[in-house]
Length: 402
Image (spheres, rainbow, N blue to C red):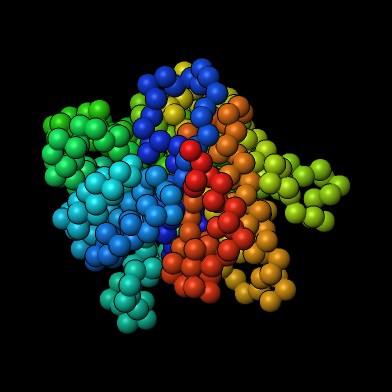
């Protein structure tokens, strides 16, 4: 999640192993350093240049691509499925990535129509609050509704099936893909975790029917608000918490959009007076991860260590809010503030690389870097003016790690 103050963005994935969850849920030995990957978001027709874009990812040294097909949520439990990539378009993009030797994650997003190309809320016939809702976390979605279950999640499974089939014998050598069954749909997760349980059961059944057992792992990407007790779990009754516990336990993997405060490892007397070091950013990430496991998953939801799925960072980035509020993604800044912010963004990425290189303390096996939109677009792929050479330089150590 990026807090609402501008236009929508997409993502670059930084992943350890393409979302391939280890069968053992408890960490029994230090992790190997995590390689970087890149994800690729699109509305309808925006995967038309997939071959070119994926070749760029490959040339830069990324090892994974995370696809983010995006669909407009237009009314209660109604999704404009024509607004997002159709199954053929999504299949072709996934197959290109797999043939390129990249591992794949599919992470469908719901967004308000206002974020889609060509939508004008002033002339639209859609008078719902959902048309301009600032963030998908507020959507009142029942995940078992046909538009979502069949139109979004089953569509993603079908695209993966077609892509694997298109590989022929190569497909047997391809690493498992990972499908995010839900992404940042906070109010839906808080209000109806039992419906997410039902969806997961339905998706597992469909996965089996398609012959994708062992080829596709099922995950869920939670907003960072699940790490803040009052924002998420404290709003849930005991029965709702138990349903969420069961849902998480039955996933193959678990991911977080990690936008927590990255300055917490700086001594209190120095905080606000200097940038964190890269090691302090890395330590902040370790601390947030530890707190999430122990306080939220353990204490509040009652999950024991071996019951917790393999963890991934589903999103990471540093926006207009800098290292303290990395999820704030828009707002005016003076030239001097922009210059300072560029250094903060670079330091955040340097710290992420340090975190991913740790072989102890870190248990997350992947992370996703948000790179589209002002400040997040560090490569300047959307707008050359957004490029942050200092940040991209900081990533090279991970991109070219053996």
